[in-house]
Image 1: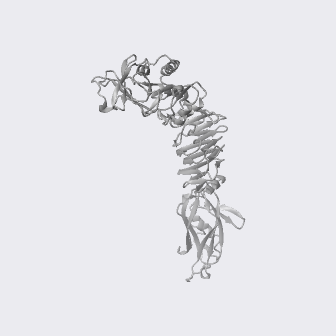
Image 2: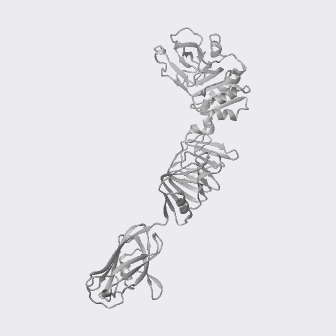
Image 3: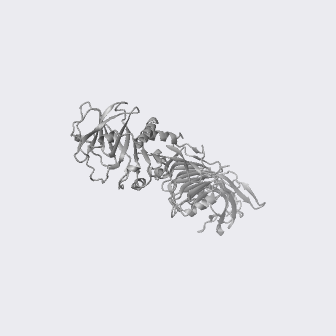
Amino acid sequence: MRKSFKIILGILLVAIVTMPFMNVNAAEVPTLSMNVNGDFYVGKQQEFSITTNVPEDYKNIMVLGEGSISDTSAIEKLEYYEVKDGKWYEMPADSLFGPAGTGFPLTDGATSKFRVTFNKAGDYTVNIALKDATTQNVVAQNSLNIKVIDGSIKNVTNEAELLDALNNQEVKTINILNNITTTAKVNVTRDVTINGNSNTITLNLADKTTWGGHYVLQAYRANVTINDLSLTGGNAGLLVNGANVTVNGTMNVSGNGFGGIEVSGPNPSINLTNATLVNSSEDYGLPTLWTDPVLENVVVGYAFEAKVEGTNGTNEQLHFYLVEENSIPKADDQIKENIDKDTIIVYTTSDDYVSVEVLNMLKNGPEKIVVLATEKVVIGFNTKNMVNEFTENLKLNVTVTTENILGDKVKLGENAKALFVSLDYKGVLPKDTVIMFDVNGLYNAGDKVHLYYFNEQTQKVELLSDINIDEDGLATIITDYAYTYVLSSEEIVTTPVETPDNTNNNQENNTNTENIEEIVNPNTSDFTIVMIAIFAFMATAGFAYVAKTKMLHNNI
């Protein structure tokens, strides 16, 4: 029930007037004071009192009370305490209080008790006055600014305030006003809304890359809403542990040692329908979100690019990635995981590489076939053909384009259909390395094209041989060195084939005129037979990267 605050001053006069009226004119005037025991909170009864200070000359004046508040709708209920029976009574909504026409005699030191319930927070001004019942002239008045606090809302600026708010059952909404650094996991064990206001909670953890269950924030078996809050510095940012969590706005979970968000425990769920997740440190094995163990249908409303199966070494998990490429293990990791196999097939992305460390590990280990497949190229070799130590990473990116990347160094026929192929890696490859790539529809299956390489020493293209485009539209080059290649439907006017100068690479198996035919038309060695079989399988699958992607990635 909402009441006009005018009744506050009216009703209090019941207790402060007892003496007969007399007209006076003195230097001192009556005063009024309001005494409040604590703060005013929304929805919570709060007592206060009003006391009169009446000079001798004003005693016996008959008065009426009047009061007001700057927003009358803020008052839900106002009551006064009746001394006679010791009970509380709701105040009538009269604009003036007191017997009409006569009023009540003014009494010094009289105190009246009241209690009020506010229905909304805010800053309000309360005006109180005593008026002469006959002339309506103001005898005494006062104004007071009060603040009504919504006790269900708590603003916090540091770890201690945040923990206090979470431990206060009356607090339903927590507003984080600035970035906060914490010393331990923040546990949320009851229903609450946390407004981050685009701030970040950072866990001050010495070693976030050693697992210790150090989450920045844990929601435990509760209904929790998190708005515009970022979490960093822990083993993981957020643990949804048997809780129902809704994330709204932007949540940045970059900079955590093992990933961003873990969902686990009994019947958990996380609703990301209105969320934007950011994770600049996402990488293979460091997903933005994962479930432990494998939990289906607990992640709602977000278009992750990839969902793949993973593990923490003990439990099977589901890993969710913002960027599909991050869901694919690095070439080095795949090689190490399969090092005991005779044939290692690696599915990765074109921005990946095989490190010097792993290349030399392969070189110095037992013989095996290695196939490196990306979305652009397939590279395969036999480790027994790795002669000298490697000093550079084997970059896997390749450019396959119809654009003349050699400029005026090559003159094409007017009607020539040419394709330029250039590996980012430049240098020696194991003998008889197979390079397979898609010709992007420029040539048809069965077409014979001329294959050239660009000689860095002479700055000219030189003919290697003719090659056939296979039935899947793939071209295959077998070589010892990573050149820039040109495929052309017409012959290119060039110089006779000379030995490519590889004097700077210190590799024994250099390409030369005596093995050119072998380079582009290998014999049927055991290695070649196996490679052809493997590559034919990949081509049939629609190129290795695509095939692997279809196997791993499901619609989410």
